[in-house]
Length: 243
Ligand code: SF4
Image: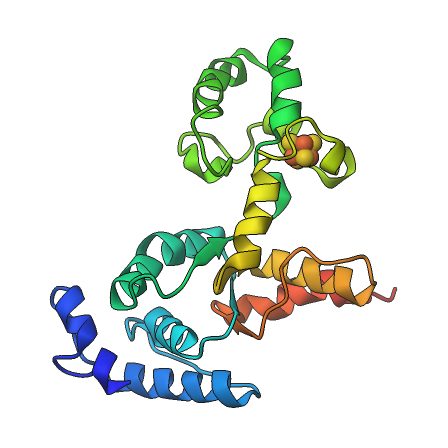
């Protein structure tokens, strides 16, 4: 691990002002051991230690399919947009990474087409914002609403055009082949690293427990980043309340 994270190591040639941190090397060594030998590893790492790289590098070295689950969508974006590209420079062409979010985050091409023919909005402000979605929809390759940086979280019309399992036509849909959900799942199926969030992870686990299928493809190991939120999220899907 010193070869990558040590003083004068591979990472220092890629990251400007890279600082060697003993804790980062130790965490990466333990993570590699856990990926290779199985079992659980619990790590508490101080801020700024570089923990994302300390699990991403061993994840690639293990040659296993790894799911990384984060507490927030922001961290998902950061891992895919910032950390994975660094690791790709370290291991060019050696692995594929994919991002998975809950299906409600993705545009449904069929519902969007229907809605755009006769759009109805709760107010004129929403109507004006729809122009940006109309412009984005034919260009996006992911359909992920996070690409629409100006779209407020409470934009009501999104629920008229996003993907919903109960309204999805599946393989009978005329746009099934180019559907963003189909693409997200097939990208994840062939990826070595799949970045999800805790909500999707436990929703998927719940489906598996109840034999209703699965959303996340089979994996060899899971990493929970922002693990302090895991208990709360897991309780949402597996908790029992008594009154
Ligand atoms: S397959 Fe489902 S989610 Fe995809 S475009 Fe068709 S209806 Fe929408």
